[in-house]
Image (cartoon, rainbow, N blue to C red; front, side, top):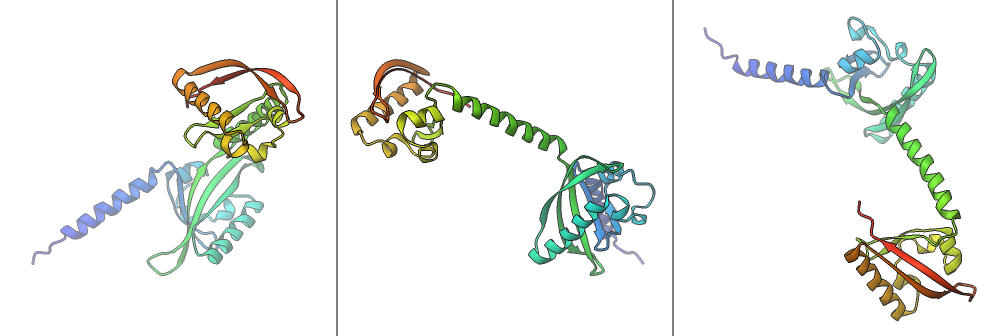
Length: 238
């Protein structure tokens, strides 16, 4: 008797394709029982943790330090409580020394036997976090410099009704308007001289057309002092 096994063959090929995709994914993918016994690990995990032979012979306790095990157990508790996937940052350790950071997205699913399995997508974000920290450090330095130079400095968002994005300390003292009150507002919301504000808006529009304008003007500070100012406005394109 003949038997049509084309559906079985197709299902097998689809399963093999899925296994290949999981195995070659850039992110590490692993699944464990809730007590930490490995159920599945793709090639990225096998290589990262130097696993040998059947991955089911390993427990998560064999791969990470004690602090991470505590965090791992807390992760399971959190997922149960929230009933949804969770994101964690877990230290990447080698010989007891922290070497970076893993980002882990985890959720609890049921396998074909109805057993709860913890599924995790893991990626090394050490370089990204290092770069973010460096950017934050440089931003702090730059902000300190800009806030302490004797120049009135501000930045407007032309795509959001020319609202202020930046307003340095010198300009706050000159205008009498604290930075936190200026950010997110435009000239018409901050000042009350409508004719002057219309001139400011026209100047901003001219900057967009010409790229840069420069002019002298007399201004009065918040303390009532008259000052001659050279104002330079420049368009910055991202």
